[in-house]
Length: 206
Image 1 (cartoon, rainbow, N blue to C red):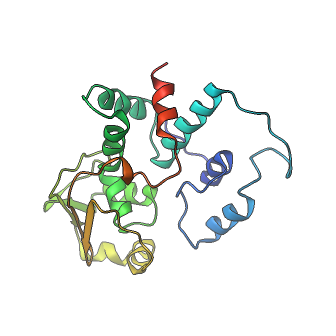
Image 2 (image 1 turned 180 degrees about the horizontal axis):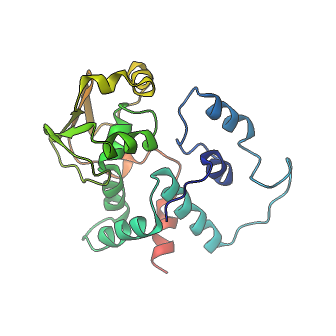
């Protein structure tokens, strides 16, 4: 099952910002203030040294939470990536990054992946001019991503996201005004979050 509890709790458990909250919001500021305090534990508490398996598990959990996936979904992506001849990490990243909800987020059309998923679920996003309400839809090179209706861009959290000038657009995506394009398929360098992919691969390869 996908986690539906407090998102700040997930980020504090991993000790890093997982991109689950809108940058600049009160909730995000609160997360940054308490980042080093794990849920349920006192400040300055010492933690036991993790085992190799524990490290692999944490990296797997971190990746799952960043992309807001269920265990079944992430395991499926790994299985598909491992069956392709070549670098498993490369194909795993490609599977994750080319999800429609992730691309909407990476393009800055929504402030978080959760917000992007909501846009897609509610039918506000078009792919090549056709409505697509499947967050896991796998994008291809040259696909065009746009809003279905102009009024969607007036939704407060979307409007704020579109106004941001600090969006770091990945090289595999292009954006002109409020329309995005998949310029090429992403490689392993598209993973900008601090995740040890090798540990994730080792976890599922056990």
